Image (cartoon, rainbow, N blue to C red; front, side, top):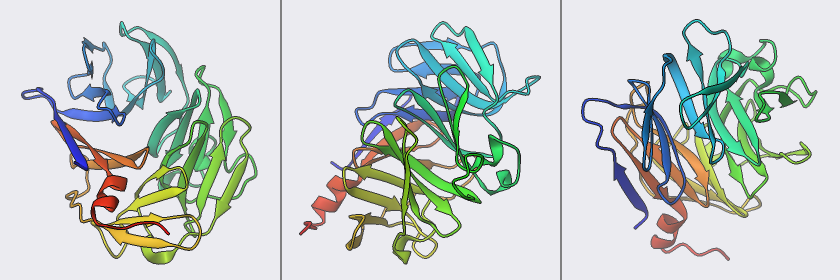
Length: 271
């Protein structure tokens, strides 16, 4: 099946943010500041107005968000709930991912023109909270907004940026950056995932519920129909997690959507 759903038995609580891999292993931040993962739960003695949560490794996790009384937005904890450090991860954040022992933060358009890291469009930090790459501050050009990012292979990330909507590929081992133009068919997409040379985008300005497969060369195929629902603070959210899959979550559950399998089920075969 191309969609696997995992309900969380959270009663009157709801999910503020959640990250998961393709196998259903997850970490979630609940609205009462409990951190849930597959086998355990803990309560944080902190309050966040908004937040993203990501696993760093087997010993630490990351929360990026606005904490009452703290100007820093990045916070690293161990799995006892002890805060190890805080750092400036910026504001106006679109998404966060962890790849190749790096923290990658993407920013939306209100960040443009601000100081680094907020105004960088894409910023990269190490696990000590030190910024090691900034797209704008590093002289790579200007990003008004990063619409979406995802993991690529083991050491790179893909980003879909505005204006112009090129596909940017950033290698995190040496910060080599390449970009290529994209077809107009999925212009305005706000989620993407990849599987080797396959890139799949979700939604566009003109078609809100389709997926778009692109071989990064000369072929593009629209497929599927996945109605996510209205966008908003408490609405379902979608982002790519690699291996041709998307993570979708709402207030009480999350799903893994295998877009490549959906493409195969529709009978499409690459030439």
